[in-house]
Image 1 (tube, rainbow, N blue to C red):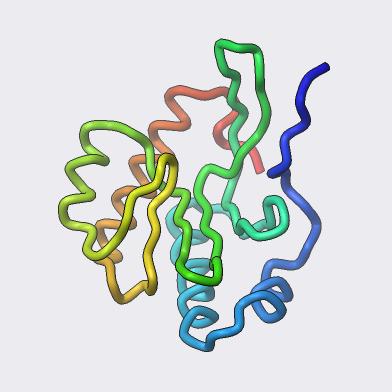
Image 2 (tube, rainbow, N blue to C red):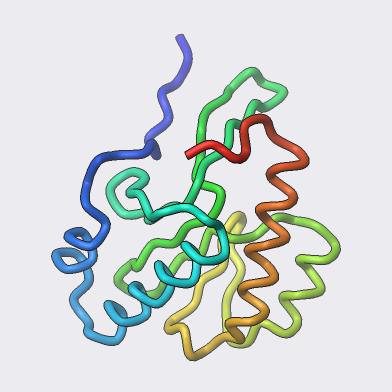
Length: 145
């Protein structure tokens, strides 16, 4: 039996989530700014993905194993310790952009930052644009909402 994806789009209100989940004022301000920026860069309105990820747009993926599903093209989660940014595609250009991003830690599939002022927002914009281009090129239906 196929495993069901845990991170799927929900009908939870993004702004209600921020107000109820985020406990620090600076993190709320950064969350609202990330929403504004990612909406502008992606052309998509924010939607909740799973219980804590705010995503923009979506694409369909399918692995060689046969596992497939939908995921947000761009996204972030205002976790307690730090933000998780889901904006990275593992390409040579994106790797070079990371050199100028600022203060962050890299996870397997995401970038961790403490606050928005720790990074260069113009570099984040380029990472997001490159990721959208990569997803459109390598996955089907990368432009649906």
